[in-house]
Image 1 (cartoon, rainbow, N blue to C red):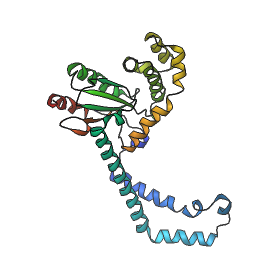
Image 2 (tube, rainbow, N blue to C red):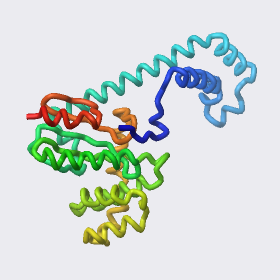
Image 3 (tube, rainbow, N blue to C red):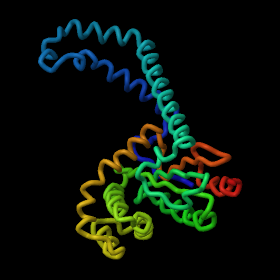
Image 4 (cartoon, rainbow, N blue to C red):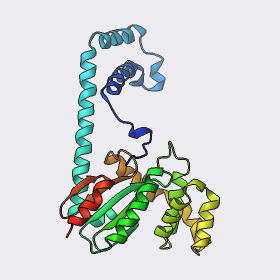
Length: 259
């Protein structure tokens, strides 16, 4: 299955890395002016500035090495975050779940974390497949929903996530979640209120909760960024046999092997 990818989830092939490295070098040429307070910037000696820039031009290898070292440090940091997340998932799953909506068996040994976007068409496909898994294996899986609205490409992703969070405060997240995906092409304020009415939500509370959702959604987004989530839908599983990032196509085979 494919997935939606926002601007900060672009793939990094060698050509892009090459271009970005040289872009970094160009940006570093501005280090002289960036390194001084605004009041002092106008007093920088032009001759000194040219000397610094000349040194950078004559020793690009040192700049490239610095950029590469930084990239390696960032990759190592992501790896450590991922390892810590998986460890928490194994030993203290409730810290990962937090206040996120869950469905399925609370006694299941298989915990599936889903990062999703209500406006992502691939998330809609995944939603249908996951519903089938939950119906077919009711005692073998517990699904946890994490928000990852790709706002750079989906204008309604964040408003939809906000509305679903408000519904969650009244115990109707999954019903609201299903309705959003069923009506994905009609996402908008009129739909959000209409679904709330159809689910008999307290509309006053629903509207108030819409203003309180941002911190919870931001927390999910920050977790996704720490884990370098590559797009939506994105799955992490912890089962008796597998722990880590998993493709949707492999989930059923994992469930059939779960005890």
